[in-house]
Length: 326
Image (tube, rainbow, N blue to C red; front, side, top):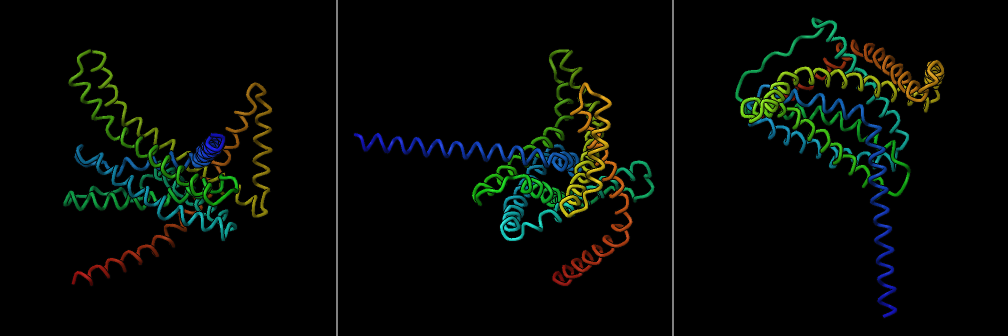
């Protein structure tokens, strides 16, 4: 009996350790996911455009296909790659973060420039053709875009995870990847179906209040999507700028980060009622301004260097595909 009681005590102790480990994983995942908030917001803001123009019955299947591709990106490619870098080349993580931050700045700045100078970019042409083929193209494009944003999310999360065991880091990254995917694409599913729900309420609601609420949802969705896009752009510039500035500090170029900190503290001193909130807001705004400046400077490089090179690769792939079909 005493041996059985000792065994039960050991089992209980193991259970407590396991529960504590799970709590640690969830806690670290929540903190790491919060660090990637800007990229998450942008991911949620970007994705709804990929289901625009399709029949209502195809919207949720398309979102589900993109979500599955996102999970594969995070768990099968980015998670092992991130753990390998953390184990064998941790010095690469900061430059990769800066590269991803610069990309976020470029994307955000491009959206700002396009909004104020619509003629600076060719407007997207309405695509007409086989709906199945068009859906395949849209899903493939969404998954490619998701890969870039997911890489940034997972890298930010990896950098935010305290140094620990390999299993703990892997579990935390997996929780971050799955949790953020559910959050983003669950939200996207709600967004793309909100107008259908509103229309159903406005036509079939039993109460006048229900019908009025449905009409309000239908009328309000365009404005909501525009606001979501604006928030996403601001988040990209803020997060991208702060990542690059922090990376510069780690590489020994901390003058800009120190100045921004001092300026934000000076602004906060003017509002003693809420110094913490004011300092955070001022710092985020200055990081965003830096992100906008950096992204704007990168637009010519992307237009005249990166885009032509990518065009050569696409033409090469197309030629190879034509040769195979021939």
